[in-house]
Length: 376
Image (cartoon, rainbow, N blue to C red; front, side, top):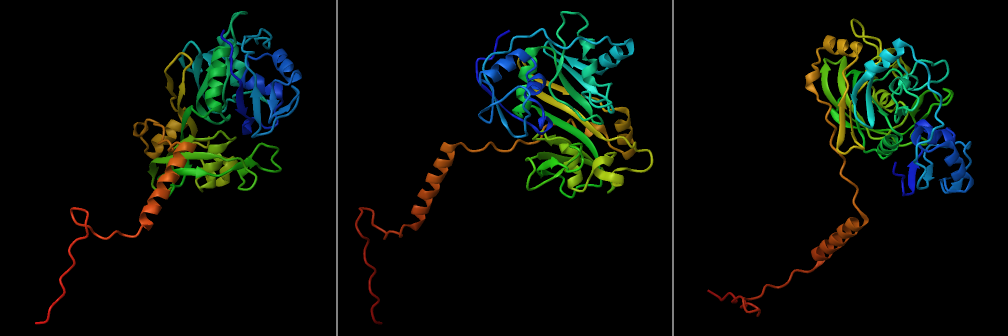
């Protein structure tokens, strides 16, 4: 496998706040072994905000990680594979909706965690051994995550090389993720942008986020209303432009329209009566991302049963949207473009301040003086 020959720079995201340096590498650059990380730290080649670090140092959101060239060769010290039951293998295989040489795309059901945690034993990461049954088979790796109660497109890398490739696309924000959500009420503005900085809510143990205009990290979400059911509910498309924890859920609640079924951020006002399920209605509908094989990987995930049932009950037709990415913001002007714009502006100002010239004849000489008016 070809190794990276360039210094790389990564920004620590909200989901990685407090994680150890070695675990950050395992999560985002799994092809770089622990031994390599230790050597880089010992020799000062890996740095955080320009300073030397140890493998067990903790990272903070917003810090910059410098990763030296190389280290991309596959290592064999992966965690031992787990023996899966027949039911677990069937569960894993049933999630697959698309696969290529470098990727598996899953449709994660609601209620299944992406990774393990305290008292969480059934999760996507634990089922990935189903796709590497042999001792020499490379175990697929997660490259991004979805909340436990969020369903939809989840990308898994099949090789160390594709893991590094996809991780860079997610961290660089070139991947486009479009979510569908049912929310309480109907936004007055049919299409717009929610910009509200987010931070961990004090006293929640880091399990809940809130809008914090003073100490929060920038967070931006584009949205548009696809359809509405009177004034009681709306079907939204959401496109996160940043990747903060629970971003879509907090942003929807912050604009007064919590996601249906999201009691954590909407409280008792996040539930509809009647046939609408009490489960959360947030679904990663479509993912568009560059492929290491060339071209684009563009995958759409079908709705889970409870979401589809609620759509039908509220009179929403799935065909009303194809989850097209929303308009891109105009790219920021370069320094040279800004200078050119300033020069042109100064030129226009000088031109407007010049005194008007006296009219001249065709030969460049002053024109004839007007005849004085005579007496009658």
